[in-house]
Length: 206
Image (cartoon, rainbow, N blue to C red; front, side, top):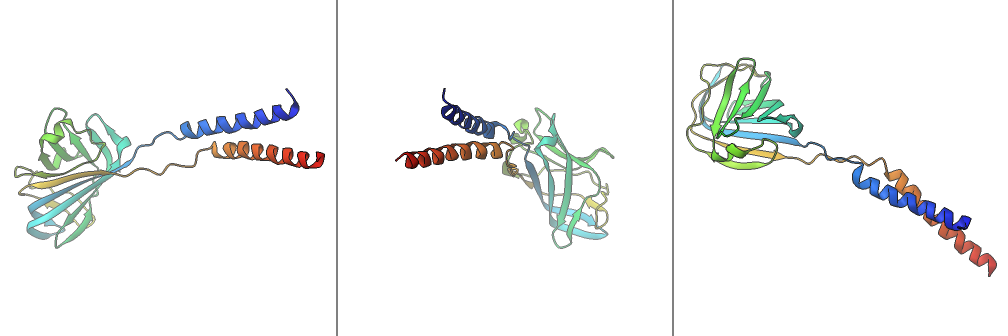
């Protein structure tokens, strides 16, 4: 094989190898996920302010990588009480789906009580890592009355309600530029340089 053809083959091989690496060098990563539970006609207190027949929207944010065995841990919880404000719950919470059960619980494991428990047939096969809903949960959603949960606006006590709406939404994480991209550019550049040199040599011979 002539030196020119050898160089051309080398550059072409680099370009093909780098193109293949672009497809496999960036593995799929876990995605952020947000669980939203809007509790209807709730009563209770937040920071000493009482509310009655109010909508309380609880937002849990985390990552699908934290889902394991029916638990979603490492989540941040916020509670928005209509007419009062939005507070971040300062305890550590997890979302629990009991496999084979239709119940979904928001639990503070430090005190082993649930902030909210809702039930729907869709939860029996829900993996906590994918988008779901919105689901309209009828009356029967429950809380643990008389339990105070610390928040940035003071303690939250959530009592009776008349149903809820549940939604889980995911966001695709941004994929970083693969490390093989410079190698791919080098191969393409090498092919271009070989073509330019061949045209230049042809003109010189002519």
